[in-house]
Length: 41
Image 1 (cartoon, rainbow, N blue to C red):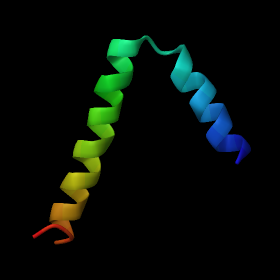
Image 2: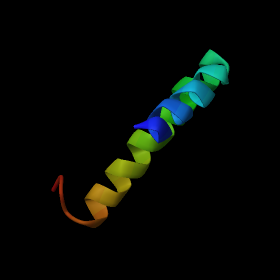
Image 3: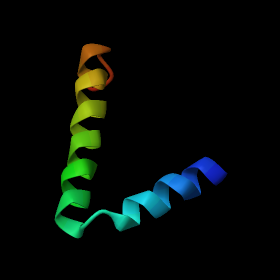
């Protein structure tokens, strides 16, 4: 739990446009892994 809070506090330091970019990066990464493992299709 402390790790999550630490990551979140570091995340809040990042300027807003970059936050969205990182969020989309994670979503695309998870989708790519999911497609590779046939979760979605």
